[in-house]
Length: 150
Image 1 (spheres, rainbow, N blue to C red):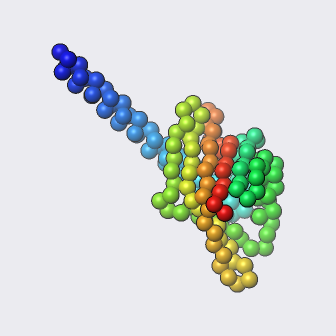
Image 2: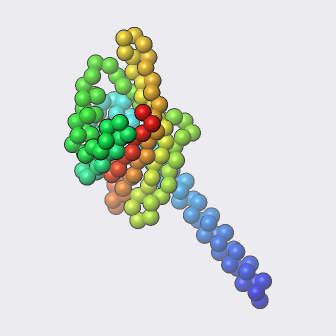
Image 3: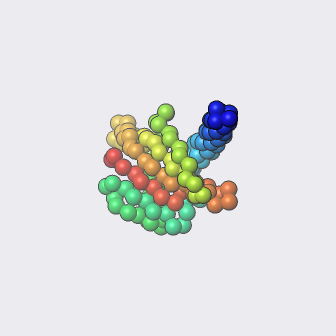
């Protein structure tokens, strides 16, 4: 009897683990799509679309800039969009990590490059980021950003 209970318990654990593994794959795909859509808007300088990806209580922590709130972040991005040169963001392939946050949303970690041509020379910087996505009844928005390794 103990062997049968052990086998049943082991089966339940394996089934539960397998069910949980499928959800993170779907979540990873969802966040990857959101990352792509958000930075498509960024690369197109589409501020109305871009700013919709953030909650109004956004907190943006930057290693060389401190803590910034929503209005300052949006103003800073508008200044970037107004520059003469085009600053382009690309996700570094293979660096995207997504981890669920129970009853809230997801953690989105990775590295990205920003590039632009200045004085005829291509300038490229690679940086690390961590974003907290809030899922509010199917509406995914970023509530916290940590931008670092500048």
